[in-house]
Length: 228
Image (cartoon, rainbow, N blue to C red; front, top):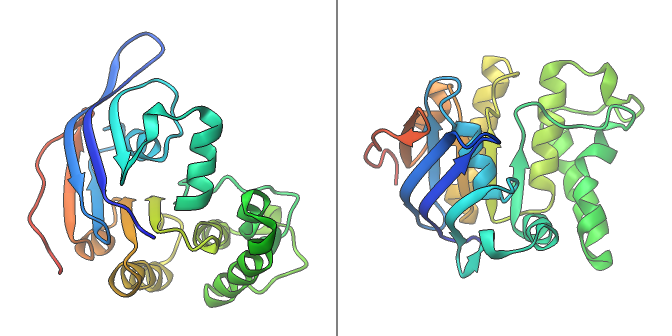
């Protein structure tokens, strides 16, 4: 099940108190694709991490459906992510000593025992769909594009209603990037998932329902709907 998003007076500060991100208001309906663009250092990844509950020092409100994420303990936020969010990290965050399937099915560690076999099966199916068939190699021998695809398969393996993606096409060639964009947009269109993607990739941003621009940690100007 996907969830609507409501952000109010969200502020993230550095250890020294400098404001890294300030979002007075952001509303997103369920089953919508939102693109986030902006220059390097603008706060795009910080916003994505705040929406995932991965940051400890966040002021204001980040509400997914009826859940106030910032009111939860760190353990409860982890449980919420495991159940509701699939996340594609810009730098992959894979375990180099493990193979592709073991990495892609890591969310099974946090899933109920009865759901683990289905989750591993989905992970394997997503890897195959993304062209990863090397089952005997550990990912330390993978190229950047291969590691990116393993990270994507991991994010999709728990069939979460919310997908958060940080530069998901950055390490892919154009053909592979366009195929991934089509897959992600299809999940929004056909399965009602919510997608929020940080990207410099104009092809990906063109597939979003809405695009916002971040500059110096603030939303500069949202654009109108691009695709229904």
